[in-house]
Amino acid sequence: MYDSFDAFEYIDYLRSRWRVVAVAGAAALLLSLSVSLLLPKRYTATASVIIEPPGDADVRSGTAVSAVYLESLKTYESFASSDSLFARAAEQYHLQDAAHSEAIERLKRRVLKVSKPRDTKILEVSVTLADPKMAQRVAQFLADETVAMNRRENQSSDNAFVEQAQQQLIEAGQRLDNDQKAWADLAAKEPVGALQSEIDAAVDFEAKLRQQLLDAQADAAEYRQSSGQFAHEQLQAAQSRAALLEKQIEDLAREVQQKSTVLARRGAERDALQAELDVTRSMYESDTSRVRELRAAAGSHTEQLRVIDPGIVPQQPSSPNISLNVMAALIVALVTSLVYLSASFAYQRRRVGFQTAAARGMRA
Image (cartoon, rainbow, N blue to C red; front, side):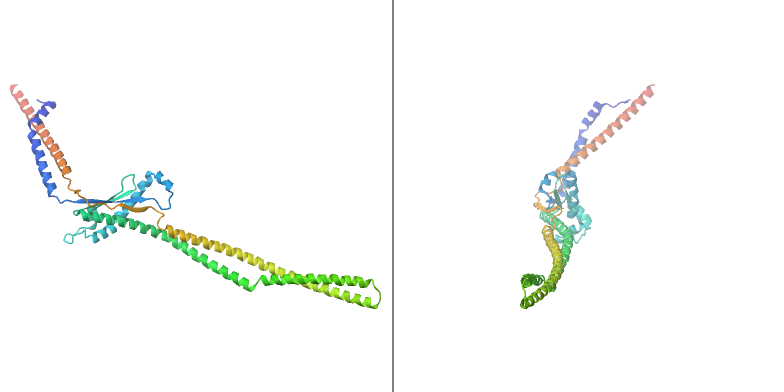
């Protein structure tokens, strides 16, 4: 009775039945080759899109791209693989057969493949169709539309900031107009130049009056030292003229003081309004520059997509892969035949063992 496995006996058994393996391999070869030749040929075209850093990013940071950042770029696969974009491509290039309408989701799974190779900034858009030229056109269309979609999304997101800055600019312009109007009204209603001229004229006139007062006082002093009726009359006249001049000087000094106070108040108001006008004008100029910069940089604050390879018309079919199919069929045939022969070998050993045991029992 065979109680243990004999490798040499197993190898001899396989060697004696090599035809089983050969027949299985030949059948698998013929069957896989026939099926592969009968299957319709399909061609795959691939367009490549590069994902560049934002336009305002520091160029020195380009060499310090982390693996986490590169992995985050996989989110751009959703741009190229969106259902709406593929539906537009299917409608434009008539990818759905009118006689045998196929669901757009199923068609997309069969036709489109979008991937971002690991640790790269490249987005690959692959399209597989029976017509190689059509496959290339659809792949290029999807790549171009992906770039355009990303540009529109970036522009749309930045437009909100531009609109907000534009509104601030409008408000700053209104404040500037109001301040300029207030300045013009103040200059018209409360002029400073004319009042300053009046004060200067009053000061000059006061200086003349003071000189006349000194002359009158000098005459009075001279007549006071003289005697006689004429001297007495002239003394009274000089003293009266000096008193009148002193009164005029006091009135004129009071007028100059009042006008100086008014001038100082108007100057303070003009200075305050001028300072406010300068601040408003500065804010308006700053908001104008900000709007100009935002408009110039609109759409460049996030990653930029650019088609670097629209793909070529494929010359070799991507499926069926005859060599791969034949190799897989041969491997399956080899494994199947070995399993069959192993099971047959085990069955024969078992039957021989039972027969040997029965013969020994009969002798006993």
